[in-house]
Amino acid sequence: MHRRQLLTGLAATAAVFAADAVSASPYKKHGGVRVLVEPPVYGGRSDYTVPERFKRQLVPYYTNERPGTIVIDPSQRFLYLTLENNSAIRYGVGVGREGFGWAGNAQVKRKQEWPTWTPPAEMIARQPELAKYASGMPGGRDNPLGARALYLYQGNRDTMYRIHGTNEPWTIGQAMSSGCIRMTNENIEDLYLRVPLNTNVVVLGQAV
Image (tube, rainbow, N blue to C red; front, side):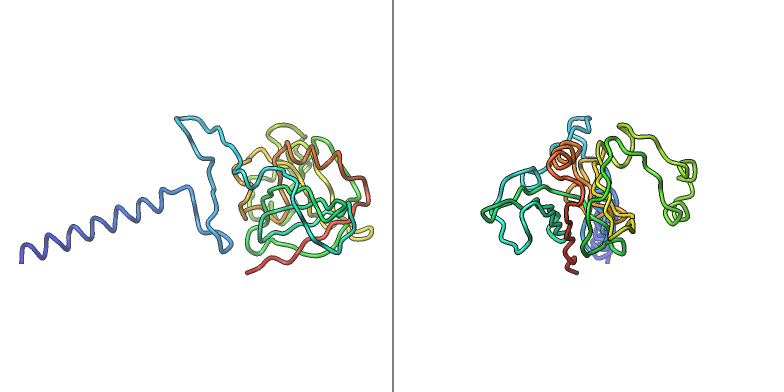
């Protein structure tokens, strides 16, 4: 009897430790995937290197879209800038979490260096602490839009979706934004120089 109680107690203790380990993990279930919600810390520092597959690289890419088109694949967390000869420059991106994704066609109608960030009313309603930025947060290193932003329009209508930089590079490859496509500042600066206004953008549907 005592042995059974001991084993039961050990099992319960193990379950508690397992639960604590899960709750302490920087990875959380979000939008159908496990996402990293805090920067990884190495040796007491938060230095972070984007995984190799999410770094900018030239890849074969077969598509019916014309060269110079931006194609975003949220499911794979990649943005492609299509080139001649069935190739593309591929960038790793962060995408919208569940309920915040968007798919369709648009055009880059505005480009901005170190853009001002103005949270929409819906976001302020969800996060009242952002009300202080209702008139806009000036561009800078702490600005959520990062170093550059491409503004996506359908005709003359602003979709309110952006392709922008981020000061949180550990979110690249994750599904945790409010719908916008985020890139490292280095990559958005590169893309910004490569695409002119009126560039076509195709956002593919995100697999469930």
